[in-house]
Length: 288
Ligand code: BGC
Image 1 (cartoon, rainbow, N blue to C red):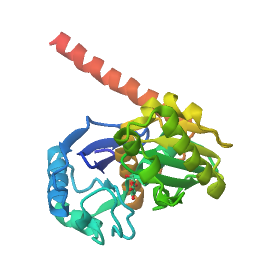
Image 2 (image 1 turned 90 degrees about the horizontal axis):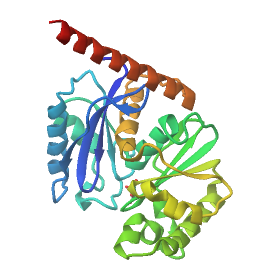
Image 3 (image 1 turned 90 degrees about the vertical axis):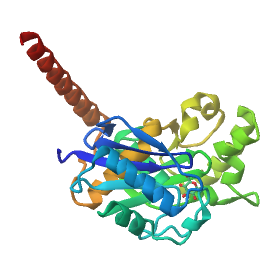
Image 4 (image 1 turned 135 degrees about the vertical axis):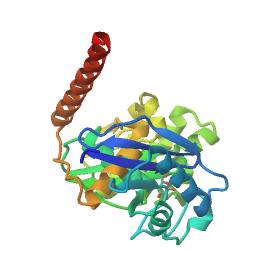
């Protein structure tokens, strides 16, 4: 196991997914494995599923495990929960998983993990200043990263907008549920992004979440002073970011803050090494 490998787990409402991560490049080092989220998604049931996932990969206890979770996580505790079973409220999530996995783990907010990955390996790699990542899904997740340093648990999906919880008005969950057209939804997003820009003046907005694959349909309809760009890592971001945060917290790894160029170079080198290794195996098979 190299020092550059981490392991990340993403806990979502419909699936719990995990993979080894190459921390130099932010790419998966293995295939991702997914188990459907148990219903009801109670703490015990989810912890059992997470343990099953870790057993599937036979993750040795020397590898720090990062887990992302759809709630703010303050010193291990989820003080509130919007989109998962209400029994998580007030629970020490980090203790629960540590017990089930029989090793220390790091639990972080799902958006924080995804946004951190975007800043270090994706759409904002190497970017200084204040980066604001907003993930659009069932809820709205928010992330602030300043000069590469995460400001955790911002929960800006729950700001009040025109007397409503913003995510209940502008999330992609609402867009799908209410069959809003792109333009109608973009108007709501405009209202939300303008509010965020007025409050925080970020250098750049990054938009993540599954719907960001279709960003061409709605991002051009939103006007902000700061550039607004789609996330690059798509559905790997949560796993990659939680693996990186766990490895950093364990003192196992320090990412030399990359520019896009550095990451591209590292990816190229790794691909070339993999190709070489494959050819070696092929030639050896031919020779025998
Ligand atoms: C939760 C956040 C989470 C976001 C995206 C919100 O409802 O409060 O903690 O990051 O949804 O899952």
